[in-house]
Length: 262
Image 1 (cartoon, helix red, strand yellow):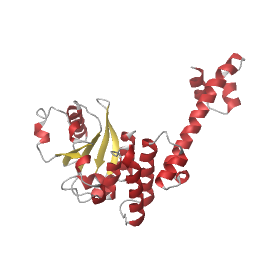
Image 2 (cartoon, helix red, strand yellow; image 1 turned 180 degrees about the horizontal axis):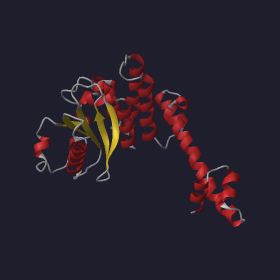
Image 3 (cartoon, rainbow, N blue to C red; image 1 turned 30 degrees about the horizontal axis):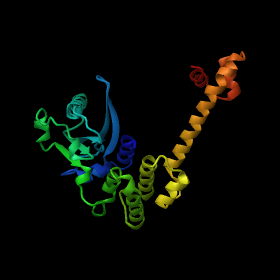
Image 4 (cartoon, rainbow, N blue to C red; image 1 turned 45 degrees about the horizontal axis):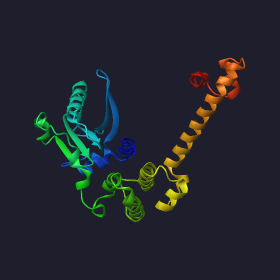
């Protein structure tokens, strides 16, 4: 399952969810903006940066990392990138925090000595999703994160329960249609071998109107178009047509013809 993509969507749509996990969240946590930023000097890309709103009185920046596999270099990379970003933007923020979200405590890097100055401080918090407690006792936003951990056997039932909960409960800070969209995305990635009809029956939803279905449909059309070009362009080139003529004939741009001809 493409968890990186899913968590990017979750935090991009609901940046305030991070602050349901951390101790002492900022007063304007719901107004933070989630971004993926590049540290140009090193070509590092930071996938999870929560930027304070422009009118925030305390301009604390939060760096977040979601980890679902073992990476012994995680802390080396994460703290280095965070500090480099701070150095580049040191005049914009007056405080900083790091949040590392593990699916399980067992995935933590073994070396916790090298970076103990950070790990033992109140500026770094580690979250273990499988230790947050029963799903029916957690806020809906936390349930979304926990859903990515569920096994195939229980995921369908948890997703259905969460959908019913979303329909019944008030979610002032999380638009219901957006939450349902994320649940559907997780299910589609999790059960990629099932047909649309099977996923619909499992969730009790109609997928045709959801964003993930529309995006998947568009992606499928693009893939079909690319395959068609790969078959057609070489034949037309052999027939003596120029790249420009082929592009005009097939109603595509010249770059697409060049790619298909490679």
